[in-house]
Length: 401
Image (cartoon, rainbow, N blue to C red; front, side):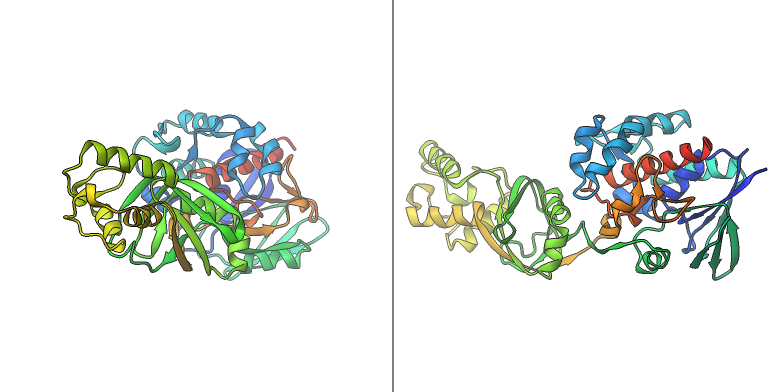
């Protein structure tokens, strides 16, 4: 006789789990509180869906997860990005690896991924209920009673993939789980500084950022936004130091090296250029890997006339240029979270999860996956990969019962 599974949460983890469950063994109902399913999949990667990341060694892969790295090692040994690519390939969804190792559908549209997951679930005749808000879960001796705003459901097994909303975590707390308080994990830094003003969209391929107060530094591409600074160098910092930055209430000093070269090396580059081009004006000099517009801004905040001959730049003026370029101290006064980057650090305490099959150690016949757990990653497809891997493990476990 078929058993009843309720999947709470119609996101990446919930749908991937359903797509891998055996329909001959189970009736499956997906409950989603929003009017649409797979919303994060839809907006991820600017609407292209950053499915995963081309890192195929589990030991290397876990290095991208500030929280959950130890626990995910065994999970990724079972199902890793190569398996994700195979899974979609078997369903005629072609994926591609881009230069930065992020994996996207060939179509460059998240709808391709959504259609594939929807088709798999619909072919199994599983039920999808949107606008279904779970208000309470009652654990009985033999089954579960799942109460929602649109009626009650009974289930032999519950798979909980709700994300980290306070209400969904409260339900787990009521069932006996410990919750690590969620804080934002991937966000941009709000900075009001003359160096950045009106330069939105300007990017730096090899920047370095440091927060002395937290003894942390990161490097990588960086971008000036309407609010301040973003890009991988900033997002990595925000992920690895999520809890510490929350404790600082997002008020701290940041040291920015726009060119990723130390001051002495930058000084040598400047002197060499000056020696070879003594008649050039400093405003037309192309010395560093930055836009002309940004170079002009550096000269302006260093109080140097663009038309000044490069050979007449004094030691003091050069020191000001290099300070503003390589060791610019800025005050961060808050954070901004883009929807497609919204990830939290926090959720269910990982000691309460059996990572062989993603079951709860607190509640029998209860599985958890996705952002509801205290697991998160840097940007680049890693958060989705955790969802696919955890969901696959759950389906395998249930299919083999």
